[in-house]
Amino acid sequence: MNCGRELSYNDIGAHKKFINRASKEFLCRSCLARELDVPPKLIDAKIEQFKQQGCTLFI
Ligand SMILES: [Zn+2]
Image (cartoon, rainbow, N blue to C red):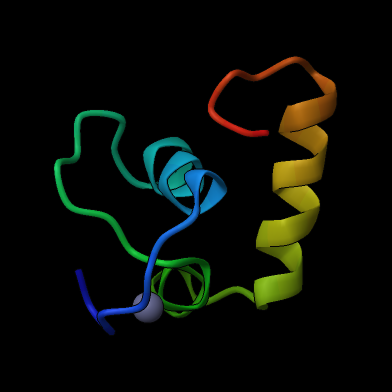
């Protein structure tokens, strides 16, 4: 909803996981990282971790 970039399934999952599950509008991973004030790499690492736990928000 911020930069107009096309969102991947994982971007949307990350937003749901880190911000709000009920969101209707989503941030891409780089905007999300800025919003949370963390490096984008950390978001990617977290996504990997959730994926391995079998989280269905990520593919
Ligand atoms: Zn963005």
